Amino acid sequence: MTINILHLYPKEMNLYGDHGNILALKRRCEWRGIKTKIIHHEPGDDIPDDIDIIFGGGGQDSGQSKIEKDLQKIAPQLKDYVEHGTPALVICGLYQLFGNYFETSEGQRIEGSHILDIKTIGGPTRLIGNITINTPEFGEVVGYENHSGLTHLGEDIQSFGTVISGSGNNGEDMTEGVKYKNCIGTYLHGPILPKNPRVTDFLILKALENKTGKTQKLQPLNDRIEQRAHKVATTRPR
Ligand code: GLN
Image (cartoon, rainbow, N blue to C red; front, side, top):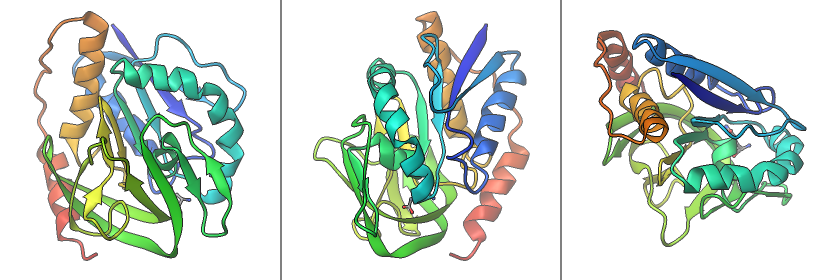
């Protein structure tokens, strides 16, 4: 069996180790004998109809502008995947653009793909530093954030977690990210997956379950190194 991973805009949207998330997904599949295929999506490419996991990283405002048009074009297909339960992880720049819009601090509006009911407006200062959050599904999750955008969630959408230390969605309401169906949107770079293996395994498990139509159990792995990395990250100063 091969898990097809769609990597959205790896050239423009790839900050603070985001690519490491693809490596983590790939390795944790391989260690269990599951093959993976990474499909890089750049502007102009078509979206295949057999995608099992969607991943998109962060980017500068200028990078977000560059992909805006293409994202509008592929938005209906991405939305369809998410609505049907395809696991997805979108970080910072693409988290914002999976939402309704991102209005930069200069007042430029970059249209989102309206998959997640969130809106983001650039604030006067950047929110930068190590971040730890508490999530109902995965416990403590650690990462690194750097964004000017302040994100507010719509009424019916659930956050990914609650900020323990750091800023999160907007530095005010203590929420971080969103979890909608099997889609996680978050500000956590770092990269997030290597040091939060439960999140990685969630994406892999959902992909397998969707593919087979059956409840699955993942073969446990030795996560000693990942857990140490996680622990070190929680002790870093903000
Ligand atoms: N350009 C966006 C912002 O500053 C996203 C940044 C990022 O992806 N790290 O809010």
